[in-house]
Image 1 (cartoon, rainbow, N blue to C red):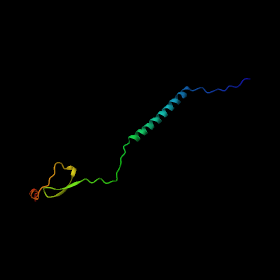
Image 2 (image 1 turned 60 degrees about the horizontal axis):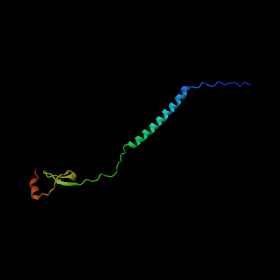
Image 3 (image 1 turned 120 degrees about the horizontal axis):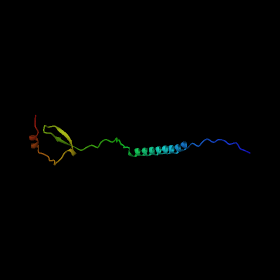
Image 4 (image 1 turned 45 degrees about the horizontal axis):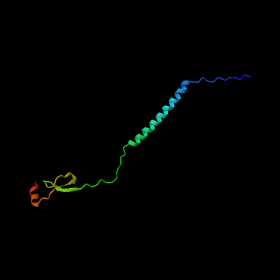
Length: 96
């Protein structure tokens, strides 16, 4: 008894070689994408917007030589401060 033989398609070696390399490419691309997403999430600059009003800076009222009263922030002043007498003030202020 002779059994009929069926022709099997020829084994394509090129197709066999490309499939594993394509899988490696897709897997490598996926891993690279995940690492890039994690890196961007970590290094992204987070800005915090505060709704609180800015703290009020301490100011000092001072008199200019032409007689105007101005407010100056305390941290802008340098050196020792001293009060002057009324007579010194009257002679210091220039009247226009």
